[in-house]
Length: 218
Image (cartoon, rainbow, N blue to C red; front, side, top):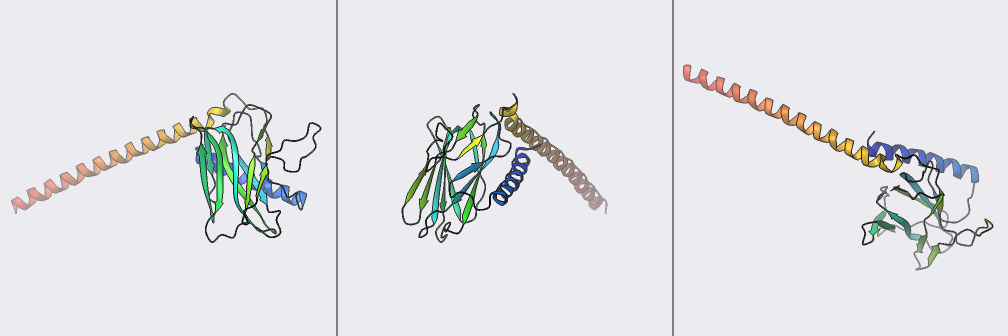
């Protein structure tokens, strides 16, 4: 199965899970949260960040999410928003920022927005935190970066967090293997098409030679 197919299926699963969660919870807490169904340690996953607007007078126009130094991060196209991926000097992806395009009013107090990332390989640990910065149209900035309390209590601005299940030994290599398969399939297809082109060229040359011979005889 190709990488694109795997990500597409993961996006469908993530969307369905998010929809069920919203139906189950009704009006969820007005926090920036993260959800990644099926995420495993060392594997790849689709992470959905749910961003409501707490301000009654301003709209959300920007979101920055910090990542734990990952090698891969792909944003899902979102109409009206631009995405920027930041890397460190080791070429690791450390943050993604979404910004409302000019003319886009942003996310109002009566709305929320989902921002989706396909990322990996994920760290080999039980949970991953994604500290987030929410920017409002009036210039206000809210940092969602506080860890949960030692007793499990929730702070005022908790950082988005996902739980990771134990992964298998091949999880970290799945996407790389699929990318290699895709390249192999593309190379085989190119060779096959090239062979057809050469064959058609030879046929064309023979037909042209035959026409020339017939012309001389006439």
